[in-house]
Length: 257
Ligand code: OOG
Ligand code: MG
Image (cartoon, rainbow, N blue to C red; front, side, top):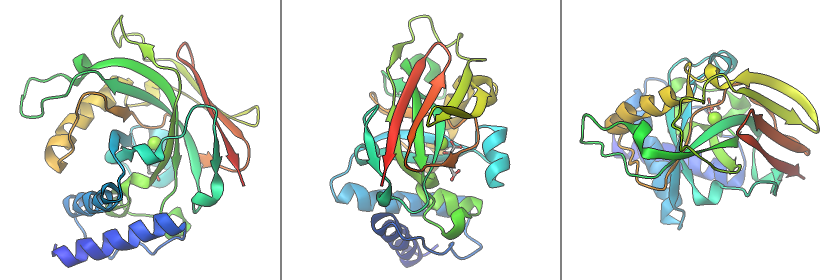
């Protein structure tokens, strides 16, 4: 892929995000590796304006998400400080094109994962877990995309909310089989389980490591990792939305117009 192609695609995606106006899908024939190059170019525009990368997110780690979007490969995107919304806060929906919201499990890296150490185990680098919400907002028309499209578009990442961190003193063994609920205006609209995330959210963490090596993501200490939604996403309209994860607790955000 020539540099001008990546730059043109990144400019279009960046403008779509900033102006909250959808753009057309990228031309066909891009490889996944080229799509990650475009994603890095999109992030370079954001960091060039002073944003800081604070985390990484996985996508399509559950059947529910793969079925909803018709994409069945795990994808990785990046989270910046500008995307973080405090737990319980309001978020202005006019910032987005056609936002959706989904429940997530977040991990915190207490130590950097040394990507050039083949024996490095990311499960030993996490010290805390939290219920979380992700707001996704595909920059493409009609929220439709191919695998390279969604990768280039930073995996639809738009905003995220992290609930109370819980120390993982006893390890990650207790994390599978926790009920996950997405609650909109007091009504449960989606139900799942942490075991819907590749059988165990720690598998999502582990899946991140080879992708970080291959596509050039750093995993420094302090980073947040979203493991991917256990349920389908729902439209994010003017209401309070809450994610509840059994024993971990809950996290909420209020969409306002
Ligand atoms: C892509 C993002 C997928 C997840 O948790 O599976 C994702 C999308 O659905 O637009 O964040
Ligand atoms: Mg997600």
